[in-house]
Image (cartoon, rainbow, N blue to C red):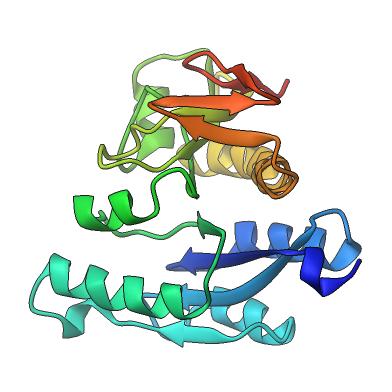
Length: 217
């Protein structure tokens, strides 16, 4: 595919980058009509930066600890992202709470993956919280990012059963397998101009998705 037809994407990470790898794999196979213009991490020496380097993707490290405020960090992050002129910003395990100024700047063109069936279990420790609550199912959601933490319109969800002897680690591993499917799919929908956000609603092929999004399984 001609590179001029590829959508520019910037990916933000904080860790191992396994979801980043799933997107890189889709890009390299030609399934995803995108070009990852940069990978940005708020932590140095993480596996995700190695994954990007191995794919010859430019990387940046912006250490949030070097900034006096959340606002100052976000402004530096915005300036770095905007150098690459992305049409889509992807949060792939980016463990930072973002300011309203930042989320509004990329409204409708920034997506995140969260390991729960939103709106359940916003925030951290989702797998253990689902087990502790006695839930029969858990999963992952991809959503548009808004100023509300993990609260933007859901695009797609994948669901897994919680077994009797489940631990947070075994449940996380089950969920991660589906994350690696639904995140690249969401990127593909967006890159093919099939996915949009209007108001506080996600639309796929022009049709509004309900609050739990497209059900993967």
